[in-house]
Length: 142
Image (cartoon, rainbow, N blue to C red):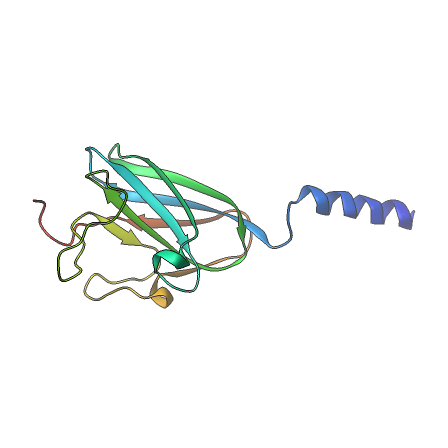
């Protein structure tokens, strides 16, 4: 009986997926209708491009877009998103570094200062985690 129980647990563990893997559902709100793509990245340890190894994009349709990331290693992550209106694959900025296209982060990131990882961080531990990111335009549309 004990051997059957242990083998049953082993089967359940194998079906559960990799140890420490989780899923994260990201809802991006405030998407403006128009050309371009919506980019969403998962960042770990910082908000630089090199710290954001997992990403996806979809065409901008306006409103809300849902992204599902599976097999995310459990840990502390931040979500960064932006709307690439001109299709160049990056968030355009002014000479002073201010974003020219709608962007947003997870967590309690304010709009008055440069965001940091601690303010944008979200703990991802198990399947079913969800986060909302609201895109905003820091400067008037040109």
